[in-house]
Image (cartoon, rainbow, N blue to C red; front, side, top):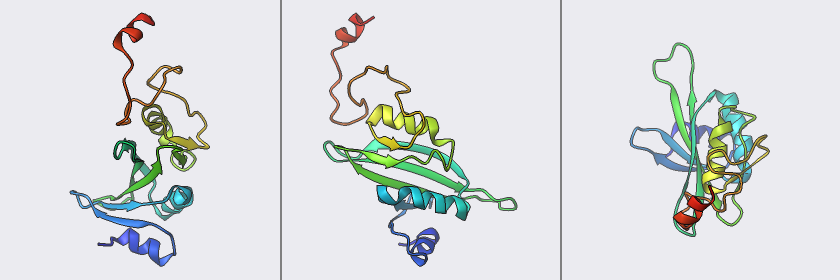
Length: 158
């Protein structure tokens, strides 16, 4: 089922895939990594002026990684803001997605956390470095194939 934003994107020749609606009725779209930055700028101009959240997850062991963006269109005089969920899937071998920091500044810490926990590299992010784990930490803790280091090794490091 195609929602209003998906229909608008099709009308303007923008490549995407409709994933239907979530349990709250929010339209969910899949965008290719190479198209994400230009579509993000278009969505901002179209009125999606607020990045409510950005997160990432490991789809399956050895499979794809996903970066998820929840965008909101806030307008005065409207009781209910319009929302959309964007999913960008990348291979785990070289997970690279264009950063949307320059479109929505609130993506700063959220993209850094996704990088720190899953290893997704956000291209052109001004401060992409670990935010939760030490800089010398090896691996990406929220990947399903991550093997936790021996607890005593971590304890001895202090």
